[in-house]
Image (cartoon, rainbow, N blue to C red; front, side, top):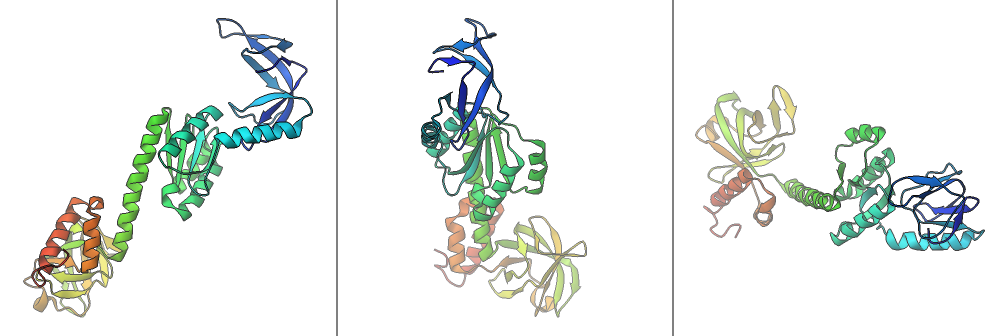
Amino acid sequence: MKVNSKKSDEIAVANLSGEPIISKIRILEEIQPLCAKFKPKDKVTASTGVRMQLIDKSEILPGMPFEIFKNNLEEIKTKFKKEISENIQTQKQGIIAKADSLGSLEALLVLLKQSNIPVVKVGIGNIKKSDIISAKANLDINELDAIIVGFNTEIEEDAKELSKEYKEIKIIQDEVVYKLIENVEKFRKEKSAEIEKRRLMELTTICKLEILHQYVFRNQNPAVFGVRVVGGKLKKDLHLIDEEGEKVARVKNIEADKKTISEATLGMEVAMSLPGVNFERQLKNKKFLYSDLGESQFKKFKKNKDILGQDEIKVLQEISEIKRKEKTEWGM
C-alpha cells in the first residue's frame, strides 16, 4: 500500500481490462515483523504488507493494481487502463499467454516479444476451456499461433478434455520462464518446417518404390502389382518414372489389407494400380520406380532440403541422376 488504509475504506482493484472492481474491506490484516503471521488491524500505513478479504464476490486476479476508492471512479479507471495497457500489449494475431499473476504475465510478455512471438490474447489463472476455443480459432488463421503458453499455471479438467479433441493445438507449460520460451521457440521452428514441407509436398511428392515382382495381381487394364515404399511417400495421382527416366503412369489406386488408402509411407508394402500399363512388357525387368519431379520442383526441394528426411534426400539425389542422363545440367 502506498497510502494509509482503514478497514472502513472502499478499495478499487483493476481487472485485466483495466476496469475497477469496487468493494468494501471485510477483513484487514497486517504482516508481523520477521515472520509470516498476520494480525487483524483497523488501520495500516505505508509501507507494509497487508492481507485483505473483500466483501465483493468478484474474481480478483493476483498481482493487479489497487488503491483506496474516494468516489473518483473515472480517475481510477483512466489510471488503471493506462497501467494495464502499458504493461500488457497484444497483437491482432498470435498465441495465447497465461500466467499465475500480473507480474508473471508481464515478464512472460517481455520475453515473448524479445523472441518475436506475437500474442493475441492474455489471461491470469489456469488454462480454461475458453482458451482452447480461442486457440482453435487461431488454428484456422495460422497454425504457428495455435499455441497456449502457461507460466506457473495448470490446465482445468474441461480444458483437458477439449484439448484431446483438438490435438493440433499445442499447450506448453513450465515453471521456469526461460525454459518456457525456449520450448515455444523450438516448437514453432519445428511446426514452421512441417508447414513448409507440407506446402512443398502439395506440389508433388518425393517417392521411390521397389517393385515386388512376386505380387502381380493383374497384368494390364490397369496393371495391379505390389510395391514397397523405400523412400519418401507414395500418394494417389502421383506420376511415376522408371530407372531410365521413362514416364510410366499416374497412380490410380493404392490398397493395403484390401482397403483403399490415399497414401503409403516409408516401409509399407501395398498394391497399386497403373492405368495404361502392361506389366509384363514395361515393368518385368524394372526394379524401382520414382516420382516424376519437374526441374523447378526439384530446385525447391533442394533449396529446402533441411526439412527433408534422409531417405527423401537420397531419393532426390537419385532422381537428379536419372534426369541428368538426358539433360546434363538438369536441376543445377
